[in-house]
Amino acid sequence: METTQAYRNTMGAVADLVPEDAHLCEVIQAYLWFGDYAWDIWRRVNVELLGFSLRTRQSGTLLTIRAVVEGERKVSFISGVTVTDCLRIAHRQAVSDELRWSPDKFA
Image (cartoon, rainbow, N blue to C red; front, side, top):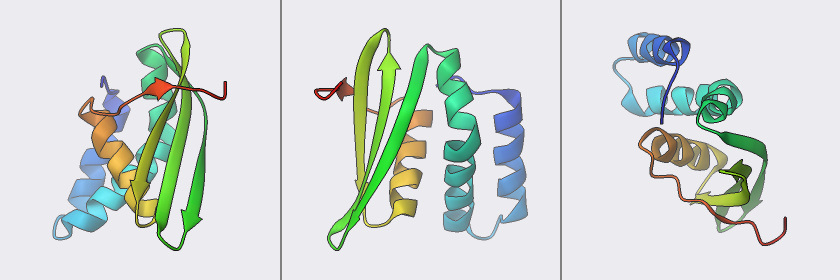
């Protein structure tokens, strides 16, 4: 995924802030990415984010991201133990272009 210079600068600053704790660094980066940068970065590659939802249960958490990808409504499901896990996984998959989109059956 294409990123902006501001995104790269911020992620680098976070890494410099907590260099001894890779997990904490990844968590902070994931929250910053999802809360601010993801919406702008995806817009640059013709993905319009429509929204997201989080469902937490005793067995785990499900993050659902809805978007219009190349003119079609799509959805991506990311599961984890906690909300933080879901955001961390979504961030990692998005920046490595591994986030999977499926047709949104409820569009």
